[in-house]
Amino acid sequence: MSGPLLECVPNVSEGRSRETVARLGRAITAVPGVRLASVHMDPDHHRSVFTFLGAPEPVQAAALALAHAVFAQVDMRTHQGIHPRLGALDVLPFVPLRGLDLAEAAAIARTVAARLAAEYQLPVYLYGAAATAPARRSLLAVRAGQYEGLPTRLADPSWRPDYGPARFDPRLGALLVGARHVLVAYNVWLDGDDVAAARAIARAVRESAGGLPALQAMGARLERRGIAQVAMNLLDYRITSLPQAFDAVRAEAARRGIGVRRAELVGLAPRAAFAGRSPESVGLVDFTPDLYLDSHVNAAPEGTLRP
View 1 (cartoon, one colour):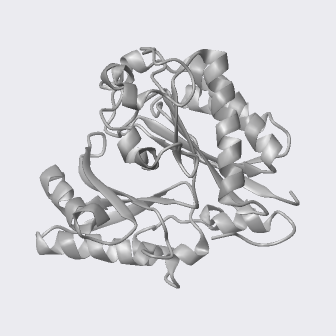
View 2 (tube, helix red, strand yellow; view 1 turned 135 degrees about the horizontal axis):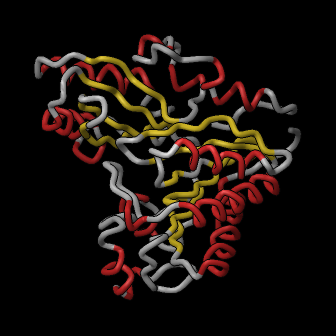
View 3 (cartoon, one colour; view 1 turned 180 degrees about the vertical axis):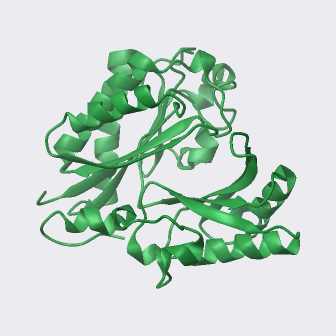
């Protein structure tokens, strides 16, 4: 891969059928010029996160191919999971890595959004750098009410979709397409299953409650593992790094007499997000070098990762 490099990190509302997730992955890898770098599947969240990158045109083609496969195979009418979601293909963000800026990634996001809305007559919202209004920049704000609240949201004139009809499709829900910088999704598993403690820890560390800047967090119980989890998004790892997030969660857990079992990375992370610390020191005990985003960017000629 030479020249401009674009990443796409779609989140799909399917995390329990390995066969379905494998088929979705094959829809991506069938597009020449695209590297599928990671697939993270979580049955409790009932969600899978795909990470792929390449030149802008192949990445757009792979995003469309994945959408086609998702819309053929995922049915929101039977979906239950602990992660917030709005539709079968829940979020489709585009991330400039090299030779592109955020405005160019946003233009790509709008092109893909318009095509999917027209082809499937599906309500599509733009968020992040692709948003059409300040109130729609935040993914959390656009996804408020989730899938169950979507009929009410679509009936509100102030929340008409950016593309497609303001019509509720119970099978597919709605789609959110955006552009953003690199985000690190990172979960810390606690000892025990005290979900109230996990939620209190999440409140203590997240920016919206006065915690660490550029950090989102929520507490949840992983039924299949019998433990509680603090799930986090590091919106800007240069402001809050993985060590800062991990140490804050561990300290808040210790204040409540709770230990930390381990952590997991959802997708990839830049080496710089570790701020000089080892992956093991932030709970990533089975980390491998291919989970560094840099490994995939550096495999492409001509340059390095754009922060």
